[in-house]
Each structure stands twice: as structure tokens, then as C-alpha cells.
Image (cartoon, rainbow, N blue to C red; front, top):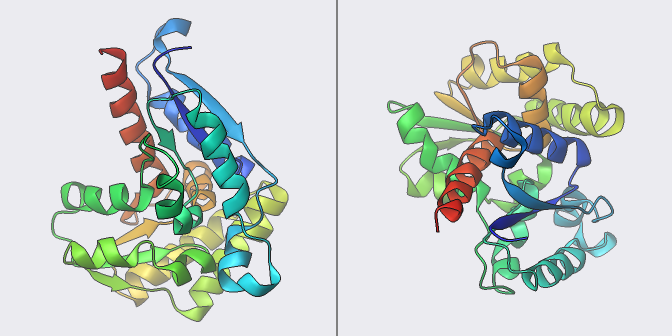
Length: 237
């Protein structure tokens, strides 16, 4: 297969399924051959990213299996990699150092998109796993772009983890009321001009329940958009 990319997925599987659904949905295709060529590595047994980041001494590192995936897939020479897991970007620099093939950086793409979608935004909120909140993969690009980073309260963070783990990961279910309550607190209580959906399980919630007109920017969709842009460019080479 030529002119293809590799998806490093399975973190979690429902989120990867949502990414692929949005990718195919947004592709301008009218027959089988109009879709993009890609390889999905649904590596579901990669250890939990948040558990390791929060407590590395008592949890297995996800880096080893992710590094093996990069090394194996690089031999097939994809045009680029996508990594539809925000928390896994904690390992981005180490993974990129293993290959000359570019890995798309979802947090950077998301922050770059804010200026076009929300040109007047100043206060940028972030909802994500505790791992992403701790590892700071969004902190640097948000602040470098000149925005004020608004972190969730402990209560919002707890509710977000419930949405991600107890609902989507454990039950493949979305509590729309809980999702909207989280957004309401970020926008109306913490005065965010826009809220980054910084976990692909939250992207699942957005896909199924919608944001109810709250100002959000979905990291997964920004990754999908860049995937499509690069895949189209590859087709014309």
C-alpha cells in the first residue's frame, strides 16, 4: 500500500472508533476509492496513561509498547502518524525521536485553531484526564499563544474523570447532562471564552451529546482536520 498514514489507537478503543468515524465522515468520498489509505494499530493493551503519569512508581509505563508500535510501523514507511490520545502526548518527544516520520501533535493543532474559530478568546479552559492536567501538554502552547489558561476546579476534574472512565471507557455510554454540567461550570462559573475538549473520550461525549451551544474546541476534530489535509496532500504527490 502506498500513500497511507498510520493511526496509533486503542487508547481507548471507543475514542479511536470516534476518530475514525469523524475522519471518514468528513472525507469527501463518493465511492470506495475516494477514502484514504491508513493502517489502524488499535493497541488496546497499552497501559493506562493517566495512571502512569499520576503515579509512575506503581504503574507500568505506556512508553515501551508505544515505542514498539512506532518502530514497527516506521518500517512500512507511512507518510505520517496520528495519535488520537491527548494524554499519550506526554511521550510525544520521545516517540518522535524514534522516527523521521512526523507524528501529528494534537494539543498544538488544537491551540492553533482557536484563533480562527474564537478570535476574541482570552480565557481558554481545559477539561481532560488528570494525566493531561498534570503533564502540561496543553499548558505551554496555550500560554505561548498568549491565552490565559483556566484549569478546572477539583470538582469539575472529578466529574470529568467520571465522564471519561465510568461512562465512556467502562460502559461505552455518555451522560449528556453531566457533560453539559461540566461545560456550564467552565463557561459560566470560571468565565472561559472557549473550552478545549482535551480527551478523546470527551470527544465521544461531544459526538453523541453535543455541546449545547457552549463554546468548545474539540481536539479530536482538529486532529481529523489535519489528518485530512495531509492525506490529501499525499495523494497529489
